[in-house]
Length: 251
Image 1: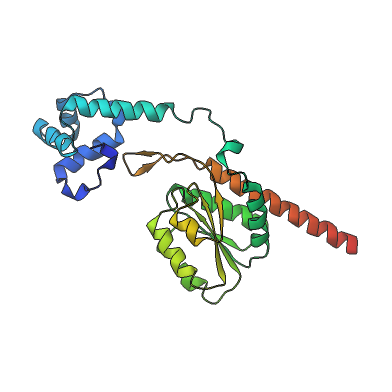
Image 2: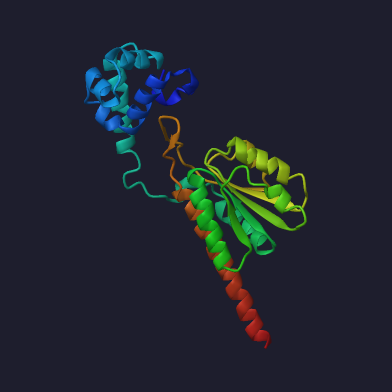
């Protein structure tokens, strides 16, 4: 079994968890270590290290190290000067961005949801929208009572950032919020057929390979999502300029 697919951490003893944390935090070092080196670093017995390795599903220590070496090399060689281009987006992305920009322009409130790495993107997008004069605010706590906050409001557009589109906490939030017709959802995701995409009125999809190291370390790039945020901002800036010019012309 691959290390990053090991989900039953509760089956590990305290000693095995110590070894697990050391390996997860030092994969590039472990590939050059011996069993007794790992045991010394984690202050456990050699036999405890081997029990941990067997519990993960590896038949031997060399097999375990070979897997780690392959993972390290794969991570090190991905996304080196691989820049985002038109191939990262679906053909209709520009039309959808204009539609979503129109929706945002008319919205009274714009909550932006995202957790994990997507939380940073949500915060960045909220700041940009706030600078443009919109009542935009990030929600990065998956248990934040957003539905209650929006209870007495109207004309809300929720921007949801999720690489997988299957984040359970976000799905639960959106299911509550979409029970009211005043709340509309826009998904920014790499999975246009995901649960979050299906909940949403519009989907701004991009192509990005999901990458994880040791299951919980998400290495998926946020750059395509940032491109979409910047594109939305440019359309909204243009709308503000058009409105300013129109007002000047009427004076």
